[in-house]
Image (cartoon, rainbow, N blue to C red; front, side):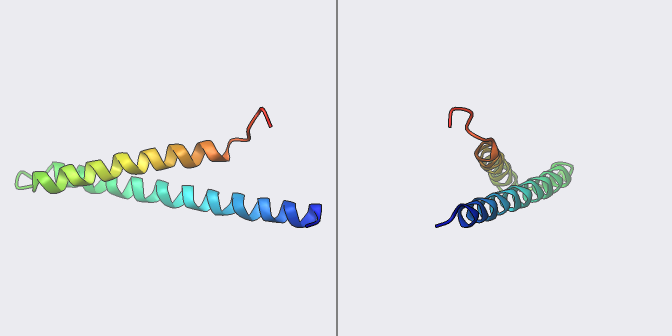
Length: 76
């Protein structure tokens, strides 16, 4: 594989990771809005609300992992 092909491969991987991170942020924001609306409902299903909050936390963890993968390794 030539240097150009290797760089293209790295660039494509970076773009995939950036797009994944963008999608995770969108899903996290959307879940935040749903949770906020449901929290104002006195008839809310508490189990459903708890499930959504767990999903939101899992998304935050994924966002942190994905973000850290985008930071270049300073020791490389």
